[in-house]
Image (cartoon, rainbow, N blue to C red; front, side):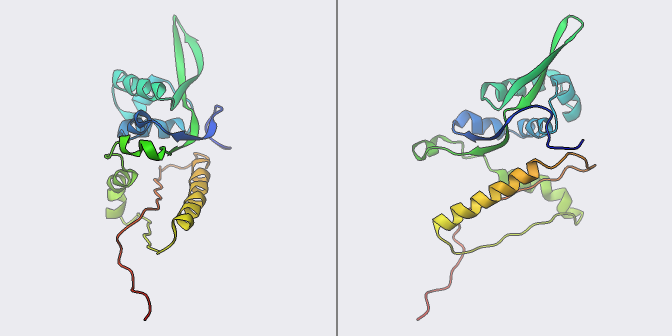
Length: 186
C-alpha cells in the first residue's frame, strides 16, 4: 500500500481528556486493534483473525473504543442479510492531555514505556533493539518545546506507508527524573 494510511478520513490528532479514554488505550488488545486500524478500516471478523482472538472478545473491545470516541464505523457493506461494519480510528494520533484539575483521576497503571519494554524484550535478545536514553537539566518550557518536536516525529512515523514485512515499535517520552546533577561551580 502506498500513500498516507489508512484508507478512510480521520482527524490528525485527538486529545484524550477523559479517564475512560486513557483506560481504553491502556489495554494491550485495544492498543493492537488501534494499530491495525491505522493501516486500513477493518471488520470485527478481520480484526479477530489478525489478533487470533474470538470475534466476541474483539467486538467487546471495539465497543469500548467506540463508546470512548476512539473508533467509529467508517463504512458498511451488505453481506447476504447482514450489514457488515468497517471500523476506523477517529484520529491518526491520540495523546493524553488532561486538565490539571483532572490529573488525579487518570489511571496510574497506564504507562507506554512499560508496554514498550515488554514488546521490545525479544528484539533486545535478538540484538535488534535501537534505543537511546539521555538526561539533560533543562527548563519546563524547553521540555515542552522538545516534546512538541517529538510529537511531530511520532506523527511522521504514523504516516509512513504500511509496506514492510515487520511491524516496528516506536517509543518516545520526556519526563522529569531525580538523575544526579553537578553542584553549581564555586
